Length: 368
Image (cartoon, rainbow, N blue to C red; front, side, top):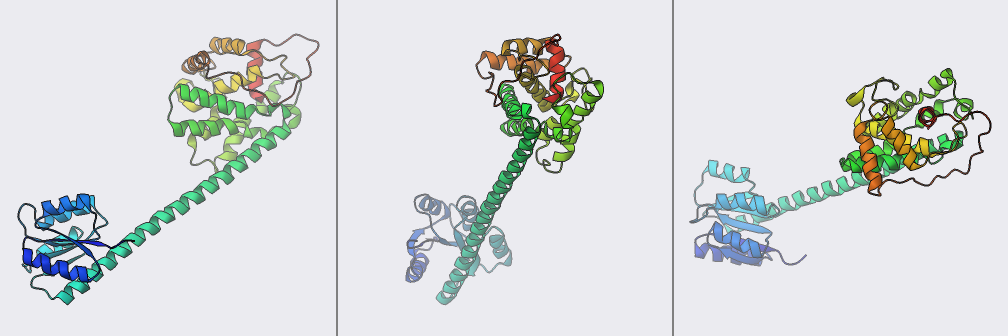
């Protein structure tokens, strides 16, 4: 740190010289001003550690100077000086943020002591503020680390699901990315998009509770099996609710990504706009990946163009019209395209007739 500066403000030249001499002896470089307006001009070019200011001065008095210094130069310590021993004036000065108050005539030793006390108060205030800032940084770093550990746990859950059902490998990541693209096309807030990405990544966590023989069945599901699989949104919501209290948007996706616009979805049978927007987005993203990913019970996957036609055909009943339109727009803009899959080739389906694309997509969504 360099030599500290002191600004002496008084309309009496003789008193200014006395105080400047005193403060110079205390190790300060001294500036002077004859009123508050002149003092502010000095402060614009040279920040100071300490201001000694008279209260009553022409043009701008000490009280107004104090107000402006506290607003514009809050780290500067101010000691007020006046010839009037008025308790109300003293209280007002201290209330506005002055570090101390001196009454003329004063002894130079008194000035030294009061200045030392004012500077000590300033030091403690600055140290406390610095401590608070460092504490906030420490808390932020801890919060970031906790978030990293949380996401690592979520990732572990997702990987556990993929080990249970090899056909879902990469599915949640793709749904997360498709959902993010749709959300950005709809110009949603960045924090909402971030939660939508998270929700897409964990939307199928509840399938950990689905029996493996049902989850990996190579053929069409029976009604009972379908109902069993479709418990996964509520199971996932119950598992993640204690962990995602700060991410309600993500939780909505986990619970409601199998709701339908016509009210025939699960688990709550919500209709239209009663379904959270983020869940309507994830439902469409889920359908895109379900229809374009090869599954042994479904036959060959659809192209993106064919999947878009199915989305349009089911818009207003299964899917939100606005979100389907956003998918079409994102596709035309080149923002949405099929993402690579991490699974290998699936065995061909032989015998029987291929299930229709729309009906297949609906059953596929129970597993995807």
